[in-house]
Image (cartoon, rainbow, N blue to C red; front, side, top):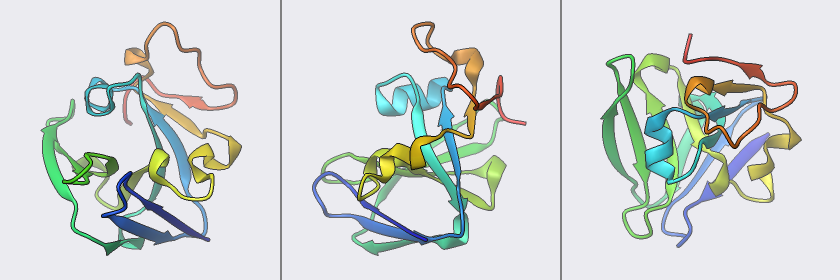
Length: 137
């Protein structure tokens, strides 16, 4: 399957050809600050599968709990979150589901795993059927 997406203003477009992906929510405080919300929703794909097909994203390096770099990519025009490359997961890219086209932000109607549930806001309940991880690992 091919996942496609873009930023809000349309300056950045991307695609990823994958057989499947891991659907993940991340509640870490880094993701909360980056999104201004309680979590990020992600399609986790092989890093080599993601191709930027239009425009040039900007990036920001943040140090994660592991001490390793979380490189956040975003549109320099509208600021939309696009994807993250985690040094701790060198072969994966976390595409931010909100930018996916054709209703794919729904992540196929399921969440496989929730990361950093230790930081999940108390007003959010665990997703039924999703593996619950206090952090990564």
